[in-house]
Length: 227
Image 1: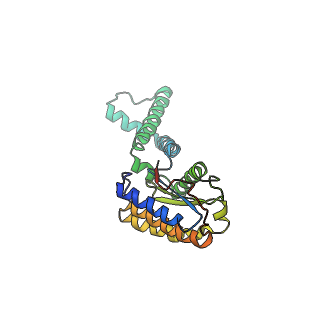
Image 2: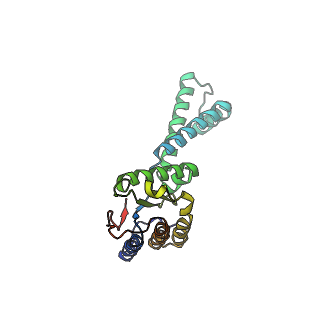
Image 3: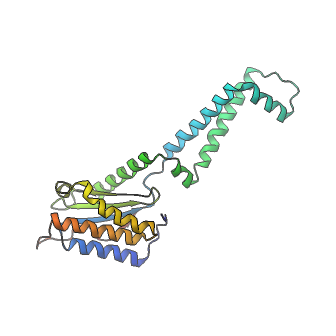
């Protein structure tokens, strides 16, 4: 999946038009948000760095003669005896180098994301979507009919979060077609078209369960929000 947040004016217009068309047939208020990523995963990088440092110390403890002898040969030491201070100093140096090295590797974002477990990615994306929903859509419509379509590019994941009036009538599984339509387009590199397709599918569901009333007004912005 492409991870470039730059969408064309035509993409933005297509998404806004899809939202307007969907809301013209239902009481739902659709909010679309596109994010580069949902979390920094600094805690994951910290855990991996600590794990590598601990692993290095464990290996050193299990094979001390091999590694101390290797260091003697590399440094050309004439005295093979190691004092306790030297051994503990070596252990501290090894742990520090391993920790720092792994942390620096995690600065390369593709590797950091690769090392994040899938369930954790899903949980972080879901949590971010819910947070943004609460800020931008929840209880901001008179009939509690807000719904968020959220796409997080780095994690290759999307979420749909609905307000109370919609959630009470539509089970989460119903949004599967919308998610599939979005991901099909995104896999082909068409992010804007994917978001628009999801909006259209969501609109079809909303039109069935929450048809538009004659006095309905547009309460939330139709434009795509990028964070």
